[in-house]
Image 1 (cartoon, rainbow, N blue to C red):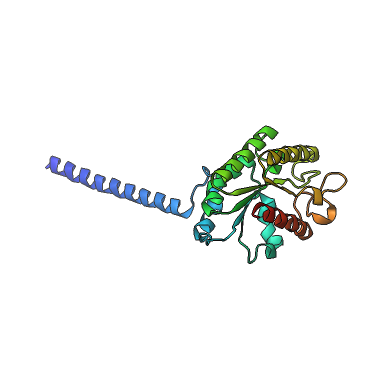
Image 2 (tube, rainbow, N blue to C red):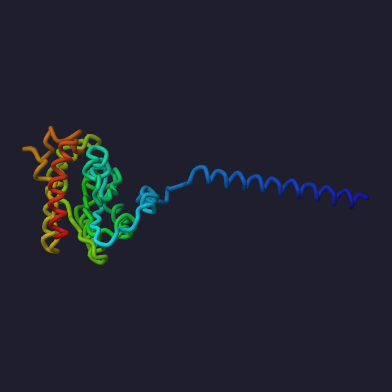
Length: 244
């Protein structure tokens, strides 16, 4: 009799434990579906994943151009949407990104979209030390790698001389103006060596301090609508030159 009671108790305990495990598993599955963890996605690949999936392949003869960069490009369609209307321009800017993050995104956000050209705007957030201390050499290494990937996939790489910045509002005291000039000289020399088109955003926006002209900027770093209008003009000229 005691043996039977013991067996019954063990059976009931096992059912209860199994139910608890099932409930725990259901709870965990629900938690995962509610909030996905993107801590491993350092380059923010999921940012444009849905848009990339919905973007149709370019038709034969289309001259798609991808704009790869950070906040300067991400804000452009907001402040000057007409520049991207009725054109085969694809904006893939993500605010705050540094050059190695752009390199990681290059396959998904550039190569897989099959453009004829890519405009690479990189280096300012690196200089601002948004993600640590980065050398000019490391910035250039990442830019060179992107240019080489573009060439390997028959994509025209257009390299940008970065916009002037006298001071970063969020990183005061690091004196970026001279550093951006140094970086731009390196980019210009590499573009000349590899016969790539250089898109000069620095010269038409710079004031006497090598910062942005006050009437063309929101905060000394990001252009306003008037600044983007000037950028649009030099960008169209660079695209025409690269895709002639």
